[in-house]
Amino acid sequence: MHNTKVNTTQDTGWGVIYRLNGLFAEVEELCAAGKYDEWNIKLDRIWSNLLYRNPLEFVENNNGDITNVNFSDEDIKKKDFIDKQILKAKYNMSQAKKDLEDSHKVNKEYISAKSKLYKALLMKEIWLRKFMFELGLYLKELEYNPAGAMWGK
Image (tube, rainbow, N blue to C red; front, side, top):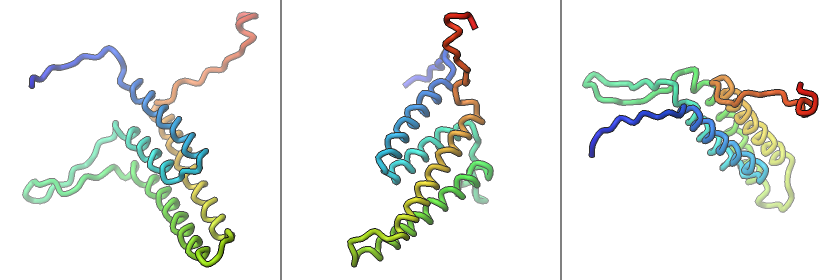
């Protein structure tokens, strides 16, 4: 095996943008299909792709052995909050589902918990889209006026 330095003429940011757009397309399908667990996992994949620029902190013990890896507080704080909301809603859904085992009807607690899960996942998705925008990974928005083709505007 030999080491060869590869010089690319393409901006690697484009690869990230295309990969993220593909992941977001999958998110749209999972959301519409009501596959909440898969939707959440896909959102985590997007998040991991967005963190490629941010450094990790490797924690070492006195012997110099790596004992832990930490994200920056800024990276993890917001995601942890949203993930806790998702876990809370999933827990409430499972508790409400247990109450349904003796009955074949849907109860208000289950519907409410499922609604809260949807809202938490939606918030996570919106936050990730905003994060992507902050990182400059959204393509520029241009106003397109079809009249310009005829009138030169």
